[in-house]
Length: 98
Image 1 (cartoon, rainbow, N blue to C red):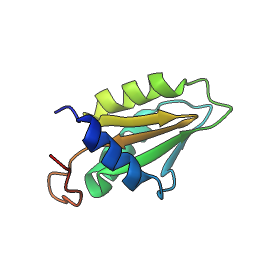
Image 2: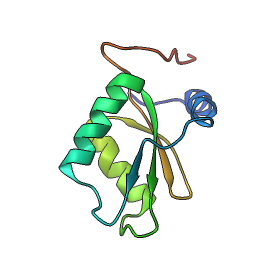
Image 3: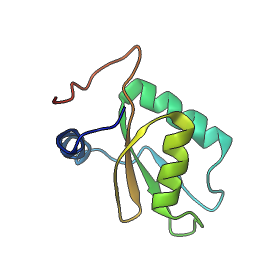
């Protein structure tokens, strides 16, 4: 499923007031981080992840890696923050515009 521009715009608006739920530091992307991201996306559908200055990860590359690992959509990367969306199977909260 690929998000349309209007859906991404809607999700960006929703994510604006959210705080990052995870931070990626010098350990980089770990299996544990990927699992926690998948679990949190199932619970919340829309999350922010922040990359700390001491991380070797680039935000765009990290977003791609995490999104493909958990089968999520990248809504936005801005600065050192990424916003990811994945429709929940059991806990659907966000109704996307058509």
